[in-house]
Length: 403
Length: 187
Image (cartoon, rainbow over all chains, first blue to last red):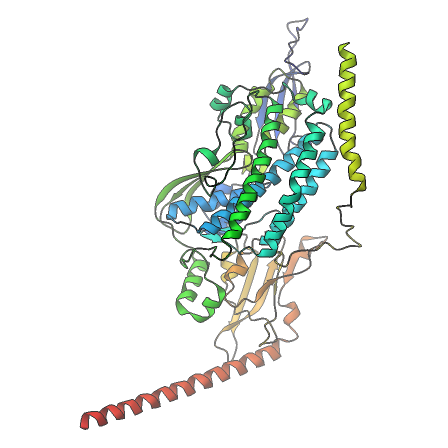
């Protein structure tokens, strides 16, 4: 088992070595650059250098209408674009004071949970790959492909979905698609059990993650960690439970919490979360089937595009359509913060509107960015090879860190 | 002693993993052998945009309203249009798409008032230079443009005639109603 090591240096004047890890390092999940100050092989300091993937998304939001910004949100946490879409449109809806239909809420819940499973599957695959397990990677990608197919068959895109719209969805679901989701959910748990048998008792895997990268609950809270990184340290906080949104209150599920605070705990939390997500998705699908005859989009042509048939017939709808397309809808002056529990942690959108068709300011509280603060605290005293495991257990997505 | 127990545990976990892996030998492959097999894509798949044929015109029905150009978040569409003789609406002269910029968000299809934008079915586009992704959407309609204009003028003329006939009928009906009213008053 890996433990914290202290090496007594024979000569006091030996300086620590500085080593660059990244931005092209394969295990830094993209373009993260960590400057490691090393004492032998033991990490003394780990300084993150960010900004290699900065695309000024928040500034873009000030120059695009609310509709136009939706494709940009896809590319923040590109492993779970459905969650980002949901968070953003919910923030705009909150500023508008808009209530979406119950059916739309169920559909969003289902898609968010599928996105969470998909995001965690990628973490599981790449995380295990970085620690030397190739098989799990291939299997988890098999499952991810199925989720991508589900996304493709509902909205037309596999990766960057741009599916949500303010006040509803860009297109409605259909019975064939629901059957597809049902098929996926039916076979998913068997695959999940396989992942668990492959890793939970695997001695090689355990020796890389148990007691590595420990952080206690107090430190985790002070650093502002959220998501599995916080829940792995024994703090029971989940935005889905504590500030309920969408339909999470109606469904029966539990928050996954582990006390140990090491990489193993974060692994267990994520595995448990995937199970819970599966539970929620099953319930959301049932609810969706019960409400299949209801409308999905709200009936407000000032916000959401009216059906094309109406545009051709009615003058009023044509005017609404052209106004929406050329100017966008206006949001009354407001300051709102909407947080959702993304796969990486609390994903918040802070929207300031000055009454125009574009946001005055959009701030994004991206969980990957804030979780990276914990990297130094976690990796001091461990070796370089453990840093790989710690980064994997934090699961940062650089698209979201740099925005 | 501890070492032996470590080896035993490691060996057992190895066998356990192997057991799961071996079961996968007897399953069907999940991959698609791409050049020989084509992947099944969904009907709603988003892709590069094309102008689709409208049955009653025999060509596309773009009216150069520039709505798609305006809503496009990455400014990849550029259209110029002009009013042709005998038509009440515009037709595009150029319709260029810079697919290298396109992010396939589908907003242009949402806003198209005549439903004449659609997605291309070809999903494996590749090119050697940037210019390979500058598409001229009017290219495939150039040959039929003249006949399409003829059809459009015909439709326009018929509509006008109908409109005039209706106006005439309305005016007659009104006049008749007025006569009747006058008659009532006199009586």
